[in-house]
Amino acid sequence: MADAGKAEQCASIAKDVRGAWAEMPAGSPSNFDLNDLHVGQGLGAVRALLARSKEYAPRFELLTPADLAKRPPARWQVRGVLPLEGIAALYGPSGSGKSFLALDLLAAVASGAEWFGCRTKSAPVLYVALEGEAGIAQRIQAYQAKHGPVDGGFHFLLQPLDIRNATDRADLVQVVRATGWSGGVLCVDTLNRAAPGMDENDSQDMGRAVSAAKALQAELGGVVLLIHHAGKDATKGLRGHSSLHAALDAVIEVTRDGDRREWKISKAKDGEDGQAHPFRLDAVTIGEDEDDGEPITSCIVVPEQNADDAVRRALPPKSGNQRIIWDALPDVLKASSAYGRAGAPPTRPCVRIEEAIEKTRGRLVCDPKRQTERTQTAITGLVNRGLLEHREGWLWLA
Image 1: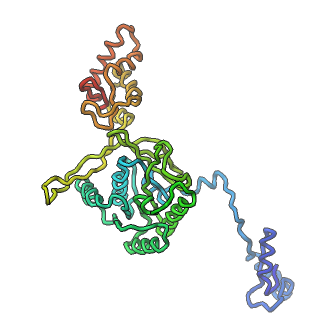
Image 2 (image 1 turned 135 degrees about the vertical axis):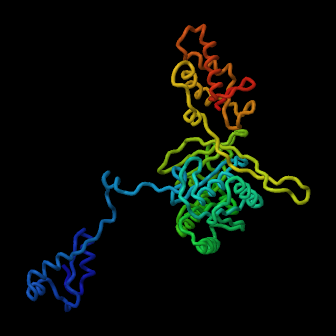
Image 3 (image 1 turned 120 degrees about the vertical axis):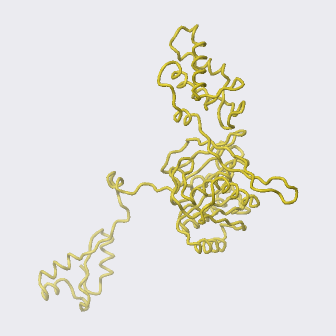
């Protein structure tokens, strides 16, 4: 209980002993204490003073499972893909289509459209295109030719900058805020171009680039999405020092095997990772060259079905040999390394019909001498139902 004029000293002691303290009423004379208050104003005044006692909140708060259950769930910009706030990366090898995929993702966010079946929250978008700038105009024209006009909240920046430079960051924040920005997606394509001269394998250099991205996110809110390259060994993830991966809230990995492209979440702090999402790049003609009359083209992202999705969405037979073979085929197709054969879509796994018969015939409960014949009949029935495609000896899901 502090005498008048000694409240700060009393508060310091209370903090050290994890206790509470009370201060004499405002305007009390110097050294006025609790006894003076009691004598002058009675026990009622003392009780009122004690009711106004103060205490320091503990520095750390311990929560129970019930406390945690009351906290708000993770919030998403793109459900299961991009958090509403944080730092994320989309990466892949050169030629994998990562910049096309990033543009497709950003356009979906700008318009609030679903992206590969994932709900998005409409938000402003800024695409800082520091690599492949010459093709950006053609890419957005191709996207609009297919999907219609992109929302006005989608902006592009084609001028070079260094996100590690405080002046560059301040100027960027100023122009972005002038658009009325409020928690959107700032995409930097690529991290290497946005930090020129950086040694990506050096922990300090990478740390400065990550700190710069975090500084932008702190100023603008929302998500900073970094487009980056895969390392020489693509199985080891993002190129450069591992501190980059550790600092990220979400990571989208893009891969390519021939004409087969897909993306998946390789890191999600509060979501599911690992599910592959196949896609292809379709060429779109957007005009004609004024000099030679040749068509001007660019590409758009077109989602593909994976084997599991195709099986789920088709209407399979309910019973009999066709059902048994239908249930056995996905494992055979997923194990295949052949794609896009005999006119099949480039990302669709294919298998030779002889191999399909050989690997599924054992599922049928009948005389082993009849298994091959009955498997052939079941596959023919599935083709006739439109569930399978069979061409030039190759089989794939329709």
